Length: 401
Image (cartoon, rainbow, N blue to C red; front, top):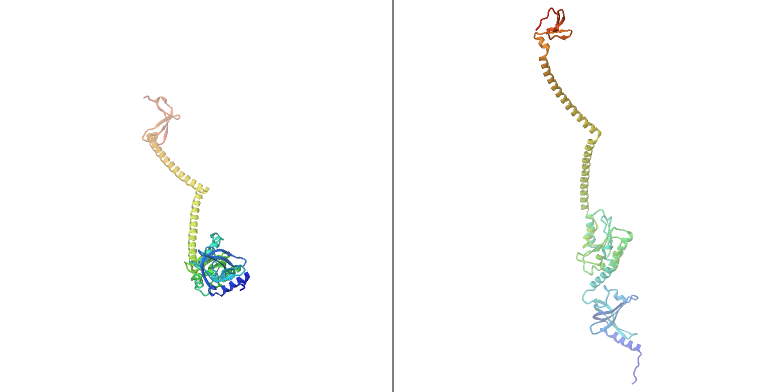
């Protein structure tokens, strides 16, 4: 019997047909470890080897399938894959065509989160140095969230109560689902193009990891990073963290907290204004009082140093000296007067006139008092002074002692 001789192509095609007819090989689940992973940037396909301790199989995951992955496969990653076995005729090699892949152990979303976090951190998108300050008194607050969720109501209520002077601009977006990340990115870019806000609140209320996943997408993170308008991230509850939180200029634990961080409390501002007004008035009054006191001291000093004050002081001193001098003169005059009166009394007591008044008289010749009879001779004219009046007499005779 003549043997059938096949070409290589025919053989490979035959083997391929056998494999394709086996329904068990059209949907298989395989657990293993990734090695020799390659991301073909030209086509977007993933090429790898799935292996275990004893064996290995070549595998490929086409672009259409890997686009659904939330994480990036890596060497040494343990995975569970679903796919089909087929033969690549040209190389005569069978391989696993992967249609879905999940991490074996940690969830796909958790791995995707850590991978993107590590990537963006390495690029410096989480650095504090690049974060912009939140304006203290924003005129417009932009809100990127769902128009039907509780988050937007909470934000509006808090801002309206705390700082009614600001305008709230809401750009409604889907916050979960297939198109959520794209809408969030577009809303952030729209606010920046139109310069429609002074600060942005980007977020939503709580939910599962899957519900919050739009805020873990790279396109949202990069839109937040390049935003000229400061961004406050407010995703989920206090314990929830997203990539958006790390990239944003400020992270708030809840949407309500984000509203409180975005605007000041007008009641506190008024209290500060009143307090500042009181302190200012006190300070001004204190300065005025101090100025008046200083002026009064200067005025008193000027009065003391002024020529008029000096003259007034001299005048007072002169008056005092004059009064003292007059008083001293009066005392001296009184003393002199008293001494004079004493002397007058003595003189009066010794006065010849007083003696004459007692019955004595004084004889004089040619104006000279006659003390002895020898000074006279008969017929001399003499003057006799009496106690009252005088007499001209002629000497009749002279007698001795």
